[in-house]
Amino acid sequence: MELVIRDAEVVDGGGGPSYRADVGVEGGRITTIVQEAAAAGCQRPTGRRILDAEGLVLSPGFVDMHAHSDLALLRDPDHSAKAAQGVTLEVLGQDGLSYAPVDDRTLAEVRRAIAGWNGDGSDLDLDWRTVGEYLDRLDGAHGGRGIAVNAAYLVPQGTVRALAVGWEDRPATAAELDRMRRLVAEGLEQGAVGMSSGLTYTPGMYAPDAELTELCRVVAEYGGYYCPHHRSYGAGALDAYAEMIALTRAAGCALHLAHATMNFGVNEGRAPELLALLDEALDAGADLSLDTYPYTPGCTTLVALLPGWASEGGPEAVLARLRDDATAERIRHHLEETGSDGCHGVPVDWSTIEVSGVNGPALTGFVGRRVDGWATARRLLLEDRLGTTILQHVGHEENVRAIMRHRTHTGGSDGILQGLKPHPRAYGTFPAYLGRYVRELGVLSLEECVAHLTSRPAARLRLPDRGLVREGYVADLVLFDPATVAPGATYEHPRTPPTGIPHVLVGGRFVIEDGRRTDVLAGRAIRRTPVAR
Image: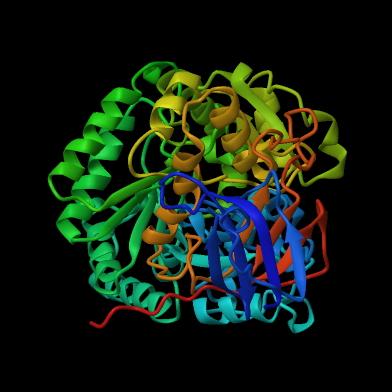
């Protein structure tokens, strides 16, 4: 065989007890698993390379169910932010806004709208227009060598609405709805795994439930799933969760709740209410799952806090409103006094808003500082042309711990890689689960946690040969030291790599070896074959 990993403590992703084994890899797949090989005195598998894994856990590669690496994978062949964590598959196209399907107009608008997530893309040739072309571009990235880790894609409902309807707050016409259905269907036919929404972001937030239900019917026909960033994580959080459950039940569509948190002061200690709602739906037959990151602050763009009416018409219309003093005062009133829908129905507490990144070099002095009021926020929005990213310190540790124990929980970093001081979750989510919440706090057992990060997401993505250490499965594998694995990333130094993860393999090839990034680009676009219609 090409590789034999000897004397590993295998945590196979299925949730059962670990076992000691030799594991053989050939042709990108796991070909042999011999349990307790040394103790049994049997013939041990041999290979051209033997890796001594004494003291290390061998698990399936981790799946980041909520990633914002849509351009980062094309920009940076190294991509150690995820590879060094043991991530071997990322799900892109999140929160209803990404770069396919588009036309020239929509692409320019989307680039502006989510520059804070991915940069403006001016350093790349964004020459694709369809979902299939984007996936092809991932496969052919970096001179045809591919990408650092695998990637799956969700059709972004906000981008689809921008393409078919525009950025206006109005119902879609019958013809526009038909076009949106076709665009979603085409994306799924070309390999997307489902559809996402950002229902506190424009223009996706302008879609009524009836429209979303119709699009989810299309997703269900193709065997995909719906992944909404729903309408509130604050004052209306429980109602927003219930809305998504009801909508997908009506459409017959699987549901995956993005970054399923209960944030802001109004939701402190209320995670059990959410979990009871989810369990009731599951017991009634709902097909649902969720992801979270193991941190309390959130991360988004500063412009996302604005009320929906202020963002109607797209980025240039937003800037025009911000320049007008009277309109800017209306925006401030909604933000600070009534609670903007963009801020989840909760009046903004500027002391919880920390600037994490800016596009304009002249504004770098704001990074790492709390926003001290509307005047500063308005200045940043105008001078940075909506490109400012922020951390929102609005979460609750007891909610984080309770939700990660749920029977359908998976891990998602929601990692934004832009900015001088990005959220450390982008570089630390998976070692934080293993180090802090398994080893230090005991919130999850090691076997449970690995299942959350591997087989559960693979099942949601309907990938039949990933997410477990099994013979015949793709050799996306991680070797980590359970005694030392930990995130290096902190709020002060968010790009510090983790410790205790010496080896990561994608398709049987080392992308991390002895703790260092190799030059291997073994990642590809993961296209799920649609079910028969």
